Length: 192
Ligand SMILES: [Co+2]
Image (spheres, protein in one colour):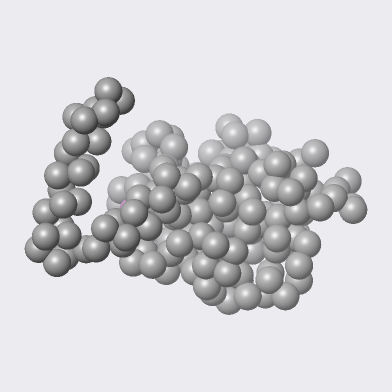
């Protein structure tokens, strides 16, 4: 036993060994899933968005099938609910909420932030989305339609925000650095 081993690590090893012994999951399947969980963060969603901003054909594929687009850039999606991508435009702004609990596209955004799970966010996103957005400092022009979309256990959503002005010539890595998790849920919009 390594000195660095914790109770959690020992539990993980014991459960993994049992799953393998009973033929439920192979060690390599468990390792793959663990690596995917460790890699899940808003940085993955940011990579997708930045790629969409710089590659029109990827953008089209991402809007058609978020799961396939995520897998195309190496984000493991196997066994997860389908991922849908909502495109923000000058006419329509999308805001994602799980009204029931905290369904979140974890593979591409990591664990849901505390506010996403709060009763206040869940209720106000539906009742008063513009008021909620204003508290986040997101002021939309009066002509912009706000569309609130419910993430569920069966279907997860992320937002493809509009590329900010002043980023002409930026490469995908630099664009990805602009994005915060809220931009991909629609509470905020990216800016330079
Ligand atoms: Co939920």
